[in-house]
Image 1 (cartoon, rainbow over the protein chains, first blue to last red):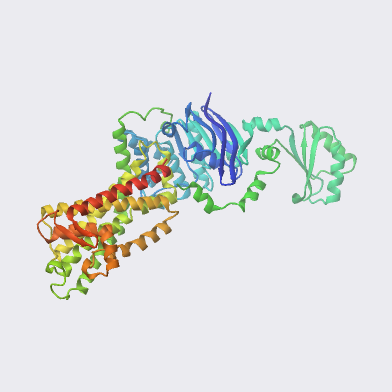
Image 2 (cartoon, each protein chain N blue to C red):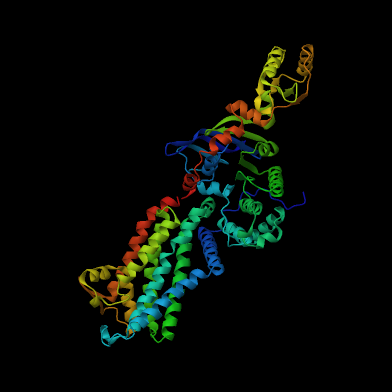
Length: 337
Length: 285
C-alpha cells in the first residue's frame, strides 16, 4: 500500500523544464531515497509535494488525499524539512518550535511536551534556549528536523537533510530517521550522496533530467545490474600499449563482459565479470603470457555503478556538469513567493 | 530504544473550532513579531527619535515666526505637533512590509505556508496588529513628549479622535506597504520606495505649513494628500472643542470638514485593502 503517489509531474520554469513526467510511489512505512545530481529536479518535486509549488501537470496523492485539491489536509499529514534552513535568528530554538506548534494547532501542553521530547531526542541540550543565530549548521538542521516532526506527521519529507553537515549531526539525523521508520513513519528524502541513500534507504529512485530512470531497493538495483567489478594492474604504473595488450588478452576470457582502461589511475583496467569464478581464468590467462599481477581487487556493483548504467555518466561527472550552470539568483527567485 | 517515542499520530487537527485555530496561529505569528521588536528595539527607538528631532528642530526653526502668521494665531510648535504625530504613525506603518519582505526573501514565509494554517490571512493579520500597535505606541510617545514641551494635549474626546484618525491612516498605509512587500522583488526595492515616498508626502501636506503658504500647485497636491486628511482632524482636536462638522481645510476644490476627512481616510483604507487583496490571494495561495 503506497502512502505517497506522484503521478506524471510536469513543471517548467519559463523554457527550462525541471520535471518531465516524474512518477513515484512510496510504500507506507518505507524510508525512500531520491538520488540524483543537483539540478535533476529533486527539490522541485519535493516543493510540489510540500504544496509550495503547483505542477504544470500531474497529480500528488498523500494517504489517499489529493494534495492539489486539499492542500491543508496534506500539510497536516506531512512534515517538510527544506534544504535551505529558514530560521528566525533572533528567536530561541524553543520559541521557534513553539511557533511551529501553534501553526499546527497543537494544544499548548502537548506542544511543550513534544518540544521537550524532541530536544532530548536530537541531543540539543541547552542550545534549545539560545538564539538560533548562534547555531552551527548541524544544530540548525536538528532544529529543523525537530520542527518537521513536532506534529507527528505520517509522512516526513526531507530535502538533502545532511548536506554539508558535521559527522556528529549527520549521525544523529540518520539515527533519528531510522528510528522513525522503525516506528512506522514514512520518509522521503532526497540526496546527492550515494552513501546516504545506500545507508538509509529501503527503496530508492534515481532521478535524472526531471524523471525517474531507475527504481527499486538499492540491493536489488545493484543485483539487477549484475556482475562483479574487478580492478586489475599488471604493474604499479602501466602505459597505454601495455594496457591495450592486456585488454586484448583478457577480452576473450569467458565471463568477461566489458573492459575499460582507466587512464586516470595509471592505466589500470576496470572489468565487469560474471562472478568470482572468472578471476581464476583471468590469472591463468595472464600467467600464460608471462604477465604478473601487481594488484587485483574485486567488488560488488555500487550505487554509482547503477547510476552510471542508468545515465551513462557517474554521479560526480553529472554534478560537475551542472555545477557551472547553476544560477543561485534564479533559484532564489523560484523559491520566493 | 530509550529515547521518547516519535511515532505517528495522524489525528491532531480538527479538535477545536476554526476560530480557535485562527486565533492560535495569529497570536503565535504576532508574538514572533513582538519578540523580534523586544530583542531589536532599535526600530521602536528610531521611530520615536526621528519625529522627536523633527519636533524640536523644526519647532525651533520657526519659533520666532511673527505672531498671527498661522491660522487662529496658533504658535508654530502647536501647529507642527499634529504634523509630526501623523508623520510618526505614517513612517511606522510604511515599514509594515519590511518584515514580510524579509520573510519572503529568507524563506521563512515558505515555512509558514507549509503549515496547515486555518487561513493564510493570519499572516497578514499578524502584521497589521503588530504595526498598528507599534505606530500607535510611537505616536503616543510623541504626543506625551510634545505635551511636556508645552505643545498641549487634546481632551478625552479629542484623544479619541486622534486615535481613530491615526488608526485609519495606519490601516491604509499598512495595506499599501504589505502590497508593496509582495509586489516588489526584494527589500532593496521596498526600502527605496519607502525612502522616496516618505519625505515628499510629508512636504506636500499641511504638516509643516498651512495651505495658505503654498503656491497653487502645491496647494492642490497637499489638499489631495491623504496625510492632510489625517493631520487636519488631529490639529483640530488639539485646538479646542471637538466639532467634526466644522470646516478644517479650505481646499482649492472646496471646503473640507472633519467628517469628510475621516470619510476619505475610511474610503482610502477600504480601497487599498480591496486593491491588494487579489495580490495577497495570489502570493499566499
